[in-house]
Image 1 (cartoon, rainbow, N blue to C red):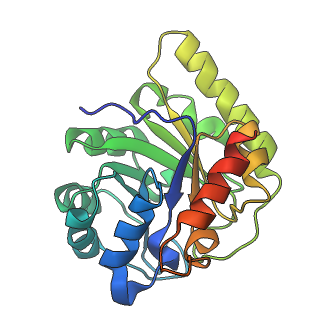
Image 2: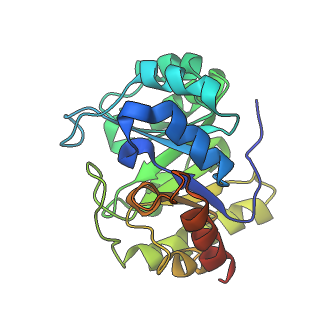
Length: 234
């Protein structure tokens, strides 16, 4: 079982906003620009109103990057896809607890396939989902938009929810529990990432904020540096 990746602030560009015609180049560019993770959004037009990408795309980009691939399953049901993404090269797999009948079993299934395991909570989903599975969590992902589409505005009520989630994680770790990463996904920009980090996040997913702002040479160094500066200022 691998251990959670430890960085002060991690930026995870979401390839949902990348140029799919040149995806290999895009993921190489974000790693070169300082991305800590590649965020991989999987949507099924069932749990969420959109249809995106599957294990074959994950397998295709795996040779292009050395950083972890962070797979976010917005699908229902989830269990059948977990082995496929693990074999395709995923390092972290998160899912929505509402989309499975047995949250504890699904978390263990992810770990049994050698990946770090996490739950993703929608804006209206309670933090109570965390309480009885803390010992199986490597990551908690808080959605700061309603899942399904990129480019949405950040929901401000995520900030106090982040603080509450961080308090739960801190109490768990103080009692001898394992480290749990706290990730935020949706509407992350240079003008709000400082607030997000100050509220307790250690990992921020950014899609259109990164892929919508390439450097003149096609890289993403400028926007990634700006996001890191704004985050570290918090």
